[in-house]
Length: 330
Image (cartoon, rainbow, N blue to C red; front, side):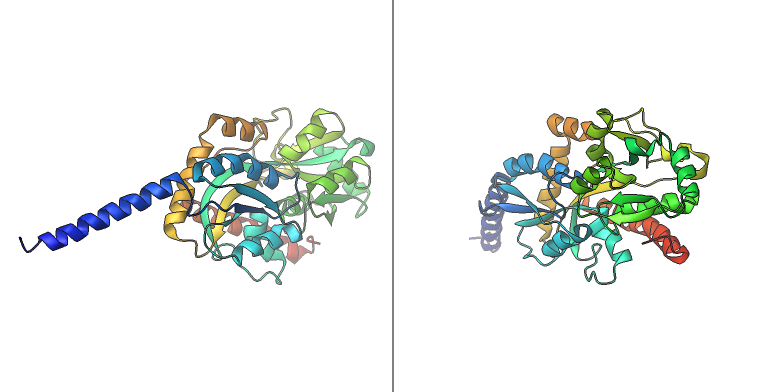
């Protein structure tokens, strides 16, 4: 027997074992127990919407149930903390947004985790505008009228958001900074109560994710004053961009969604999830649902999501620092 035959046999057995493992992984997740896809907000908001769009196709591809788990509160950070603290076995994932992953800790020193290091990025799902809205009771129809009203009624008007340190909160503060307005921030636990109070006249203005506000805008119960991206949204081209107003030239904020796991999620699992996520985002049914909600289909590598989160955090930090230094954040 040639001296290299033992080595060759071992190599062949190892290759066969690896092929068997790869085949098993292609068929399903290690076991058929459900995966918890954590959403840091109550049901009905934009993050919940995205989670429910991808949960079913992800379950089919992984061969195991994917259950959306709403863990609301504290601007999404309670849900994020649950994933940070979870066993990195692939059965607890986060459908995350900029709020709980990076922004909230800029406002709240009590948040001990760092979303840039304590979560394993899988892939960017999409980006969507927010929209600054009012109800029919204010009589305001344009952002210019809202600015004028705020300056006449100094410190008397409020804007709602889904929580302190969320992109919605930062967006309202950015309007205050750029336009010299004095809208007072009123945080809510999620989009449902926030929009209900706006429509009921309990609060005058709100920053909402476009997908959550669109049904009320289309029904005429809510007046859109401007989307937060530099240009108009394809989902609602009739709504002007805030940046079209000279006082808000260069205004640019958005909400993004990504898939994450605990920091020590094994690299093969990250790679598998990333591959499946990218394929899901190319499915026609998923594409149509996201586009209808005004959410872009992004995808990309875990490394690209890492760089994206880092850049977004730095951009928002500049706004937060300026708001804090001028006393605008509250």
